[in-house]
Amino acid sequence: MVLPSEDRRIVIHVDMDSFFSAIEVRENPKLKGLPVVVGADPKGGKGRGVVSTASYEAREFGIRSGMPISRAYKLCPHGVFLPVNMPLYRRVSTRIMDILRKYADKFQRWGLDEAFLEVTKKAQTYGGAKKLALKIKKEIRRREGLTCSIGVGPNKLIAKVASDHQKPDGLTMVEPDQRKDFLAPLPVRKIPGVGRKTERALGRLGVRTIGQLARVDRQTLTSLLGKWGDELYYLARGIDQSEVEEGWERKSVGSEHTFEKDTDDTRVLDETLEAMIERIHRSITEEGYAFRTITLKVRFEDFETHTSSRSVDHSTSDIGLIKKISRDLLREYLGRGKRFRLVGIRLSNLEKVDKDQRPIDAFLSR
Ligand code: TTP
Ligand code: MG
Image 1: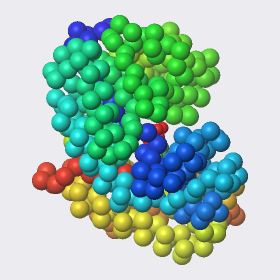
Image 2 (image 1 turned 90 degrees about the vertical axis):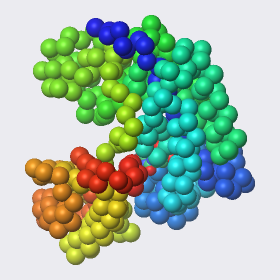
Image 3 (image 1 turned 60 degrees about the vertical axis):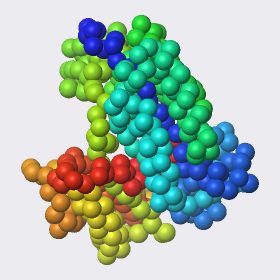
Image 4 (image 1 turned 30 degrees about the vertical axis):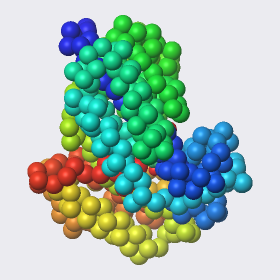
């Protein structure tokens, strides 16, 4: 089923290349060409935090986002390890979004370093969209000294997968009749929203590529994955009717903390969570948001990692409630005879309660 409206839209997705580390290199050109790793509390590679991002030179050593700094250090001891300077990255992000917005009929920021632009009217044709994309790249490079990768396609799904296709500094055009061939050879996890869990479930059906996924019937997918299976049925065919929506961002905000030393001291755990909650709470209320879901993440000393969530009936911004629920959630993990390496808190299902406020900055950390 391809709806006629599907083919009429032209959507661009822009994603900055190795965003945090590219900014660091721009600020300090001596770092150009070096393996640069940005992460929480890096201590020259001896810290216990995780990697936020790595320059493409550092990725050659196998360093990836989310990896412990200590592992990154083992892979590349001569790398340059830098702390996260979020206020700087936010300022750069805001300026980039201001550039992008001008090129769009409709604009949707999607996190700190990416955005969707519907350009159906401004571009008219795929040829026009390509010209627009090249202009965007040029302007970002000239004004900010940074590169980005761009995908152009008939909907948000295709545009997003395409922007990731030739990184860094790429431009990938996928016209409506090319979408199936474009998607078919890619692994299923390239579909936004497909994580390890879905990948594993599909793997059990022998499905590894999007092309294989497109051959599975709808019933099988829904009985395996429920509503998400139904969505996947369409996504695998390159069909995505979701709109480019102004002001709708990735709706969650959270933070996590790796302890200096693994701990099972409940006071330390409580205090750490409280401090994080106060910071996150300040940020959501300042931006005029309320939440419905709280997620606690814990990682034990042996790296076993768990998350558990609880949702409330109506959206709220009650800090006492966040603290209480997080303590309840934490209790399930106490007394296991294992120390904690990391705790994290995330608020999701955010809802705007104060319409006059600016949209929330998509995340404090992912
Ligand atoms: P990404 O766009 O996923 O990564 P990137 O811009 O660093 O690299 P790429 O060229 O592959 O797009 O994320 C944007 C920024 O978000 C990234 O620079 C750092 C931050 N981030 C984290 O802090 N933790 C994470 O796990 C990820 C994936 C990103
Ligand atoms: Mg990026």
